[in-house]
Image (cartoon, rainbow over all chains, first blue to last red; front, side, top):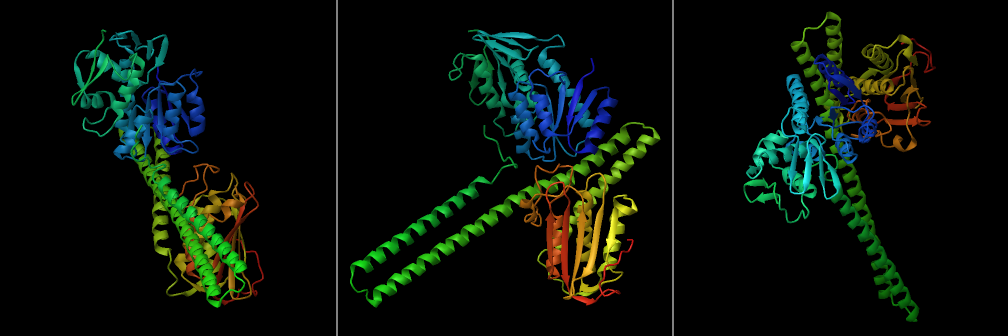
Length: 236
Length: 326
């Protein structure tokens, strides 16, 4: 199936250039130049024609990219987001990722890198979903994790996972019982260098605990191993 | 969630706190002054006779209190100005980053594309055109930044005779060529020649900026009237009128400020750094002239009027406007 990609970019030249290249790679592409309209299209949790990937510029007229990414997640849309921006400071990267972007590319970028990132994001999503035959479901204590639907069902509630949350959880499930280091998580889930200064992992762990744990403040399953990383205990 | 250094909003809050402190201090000083008056006057009412010394103390105190209030108001005013400039400055860094990086990113993207894929001739031509536009945009931004630095707070050192009428018509030709506009999009009203003392290249930069703006903020059809004339008191005027998107009254005062850009109302497709009109104002100020803007409101066009002193001689027909096809 052809992946559908939405490009949210107000600079006509860039939008046209990216579109041309993605179409040449066989993707189905749409362009939305306005931040506000992009948000209202993406924030709807049951969109008419969902996208497989969103390429999102940060500087947009009206509503900026951080807000769009955040609004998408709030609205329950967990489509992978590749953020494009003129700012390349490390803290901006982190800000983007914390706002809900799944990957990040600074302008100007290499075309080959862009195409690789797009392919990578779609692949990571498939991996997290378990499309390629690997782990599709898991059980953590009383919580049922459905990677195919990006959902956690626990205590009569259903929680939706973002791509990054799903990937982090999957990494922990695959290494259940073992300690997974923060550096490894940053590298494998966020595509960042292991020594990046960020609290993103800790924040995501806090969120996952809210889904998995009956009492998130004294976690039984998602344990912090001081100075080493995190360990997921399935039973109990 | 601790978000490190979001440049979109960083650094605004603390300075506004200082302003709150300043305003509170003013309120306290006013309250003290009023208290002083009450005490002083009730004293005066109680004592049958006010001694001269008491009057002197009373007046001196009042004057000092008023000075204190005045000083505080001044400080807060300066602080507000500084904070505003600061905000505009950080917007400017953002805008310039965007204005520089976007065309560079586009050029790189198209270059990569040309290198990676074999494309039909027509498509290649398209891409070359796009790339040329990006280079122009880059060049404009660089020139704007350089000009803004060059003409800020700098009076014309060595004014020489300049023919304003010719200079304006030349700028019109340049603008027309640059934007590939038909001949009739610009109309010139004014004398064949109008000489004054000034800096020709600075004036050309200013006029080009005004004309560029007129085109940039026009709607689909560009129609700009340019008028040059002598006011009779040794002053020349230049008026540029467009029929474009105009602006609301609130913006008229602010647009000449450095880094100022009209926000959300205008699509961001109007590229820019917020320097164009600031350059115009700087150049005109350097010539001891004035510049102003008028607009009947959004969608009703704008008119920019520049006056410049130092006319050497009036135009051939004594300044009577005569239409000359630019």
